[in-house]
Length: 158
Image (cartoon, rainbow, N blue to C red; front, side, top):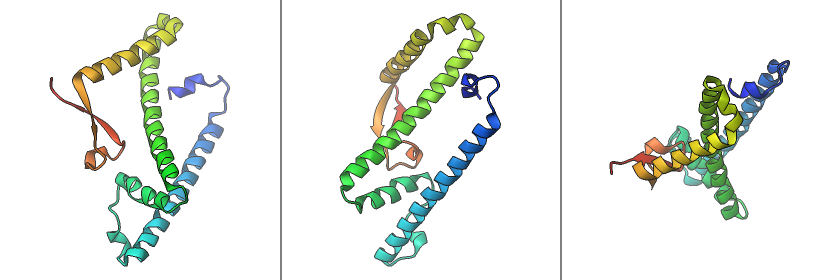
């Protein structure tokens, strides 16, 4: 909804919604074909049933995709690119969340719109300062609570 404010007033939103929904559906189909074909190949290779190859859920991406990438030529390059992609997807989500909060702030205080760059920089800097004071970075791929990102910001008391 917030990103719609960047569109022209007479933009045909139904076409944009149909394109985004269709591309999302096609991407899901391609991803499911990749996951299930790799699970099938692993099942044949290990000589066990498919349901015992890997656990389901969001963590499946950290099991099946790395296994598929390890079988490609230049597997180290594909693995690095895959995890960079996951990192940038998480970073993109954080920027979208920041932009949502700032848009609400700009709507409440219209005079801040003249200082967008400064307010974004101040907001980002204060987030990083608070995170460094109140939290620690932990590598937590193996924990069930961290299936959405390879790095998790966990709060600890000083």
